[in-house]
Length: 582
Image (tube, rainbow, N blue to C red):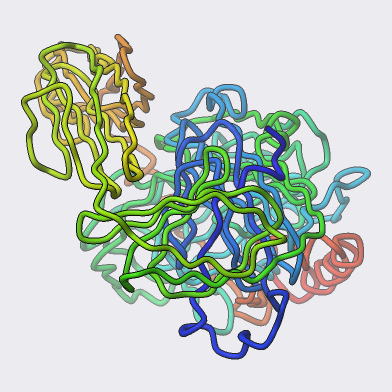
């Protein structure tokens, strides 16, 4: 069936929508169709719908969400008298993102209002290597801590987090997490920028890890927590702080001999890392371990195909519905689609052939009609019962009709809408909605599928395992409902481990979580004596805040990266003269 004919019409009640009663055609409304391989979508502020679905909505911005193996999000602007068609396709995360790190989730976002840039090459910023103050325009305030990104090389960015003790490792003139620890700074990020207080003899130094970011498309912009630095053009590297657990009462000594105490350095080992092109952003939620080097590869080409958006004009026609008695519930269907409402009301429909079924107090009416051509429907309800026959597997499955159990395989019911729940031990429950017209006979076939089974092993064994709301000691077996699950494993003396699994009806899957021994890193304490000669990091005159980047990534920056890169290079030259680089 053509997409144009797949309409579940959104009901527009005139009593709630003033100013439209005088129009033959619906003003300031458009049609939104969602189709594809995903079974269910949600639209914040509108509702949750089975697909395919078509809604008539006021002109404006809408976000469509689907949660499958990959999270999908489509942000569109619905114009007046326009039909936007969104086709959503699910995919295995491994097709889109892979690497030697823990990937907790993958998301594809389509945003009609943004254009994520692709460049001819990486910018040459001419940055001077070393530690100390540096110019950084990106300041972010709410995910997960106040933070800023600094360009530390043409293709390397470093994340600074407020209130942490950050190390600076050098190899030659270029910072490298395996280089010599030169300085540590207590990072202070405020409303006017970032500054640092040089410390010595710190009781804790934040570990760093490095992530090399690659893509099947070169020279596309990268984003961490939806913020980007000029150097983040694929391929690029990120230096990220990794704090696997909360740290309390960290002490250090300033250059002047003042003892400072940092009461709490929050845990951060999970990052939102993305690359984008055109209207599409591909995001991976990644979990890191301290002092490690990682590589992550993004496949943007298949990601772009998961959300397809097209637009075409549409005509909407007014239809008034009344029933005797009033207050009857009705369902309008067009093919496999449907819309609900209560009489009397006026709504708007695109052209097509429809069937309306109305029911109230055990009575009902059914009528077919066409749009355009029908402007008013007057239905008289009659007490004619319907018969519903069940054909379910397994045969011992329990059947509930609107929450009430039924014993027979065939029941007589008044006209109306019913929710049928079919359950059996060891099977995935099924819920079906049916509408029965007056004097109708209908057979409902339901075949239940087995619950998925997950076998969990850990290296070493004996770890405490949490999967959803289930717990066990490895090796163990858990039976779950279909869905995506985070497997968490913990064992005394070892770092916590995680894995992500996707379970579908009837799956039998195995997952192994490898736990790494907790090792006290000498660099956290003993190497702090190397910072005895550290001096104060210059204050905020060398760093600039642009907090507007915190809410939206990329569109403004991506449209003018070359001028900003040139400006950045100029600022760096000036700042390098002012600041004492090390």
